[in-house]
Length: 218
Image 1 (cartoon, rainbow, N blue to C red):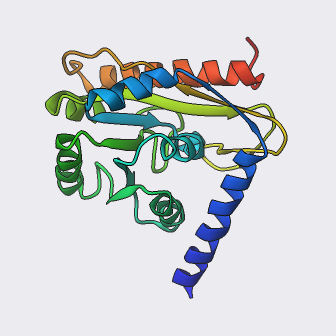
Image 2 (cartoon, rainbow, N blue to C red):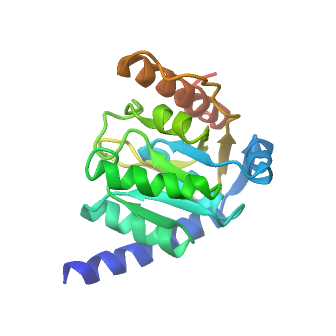
């Protein structure tokens, strides 16, 4: 019964997302940053915030097919994982903390084939918009380009969850932003410095998207 509920919820969620995006005007800033990386045949790690996951997830599948996402195994993650799978993403199940070695091994295989992996850096339980340590080390080891893709909307619902997930309302404008690659040439000296580096990088573009839609004041 639980499995049937997850399947039905994921189907409803998938079509809801697609309808909501279809009913909005879509504006994209920085698309060349992504297209240049795809054309260069370099592996890419796309860092995203949990509360804005639907924006890059919907967008990326329209631009390339060599896509993967790290997905947990709890019920909420299972619903989104099924949506991602139907959108063409390969799934890497687990997290860099739980089953970490197996996850990193699978990530390495994808990166060696110039794949793209989406990582929710503040998942699975936050705190929101504070990145976990580890991404830059993996990226440096496998010569991976780190970018962030995020979005905002002029009209939206904000779910009362730990991540304050945003869902666009119909008949507004959705703003997507693709950053240039993060310039990092050596692993930060401490985990705290890595957290600060990646969090500041991601929040710079998240704040830009929110300013463009009027969610936060310019």
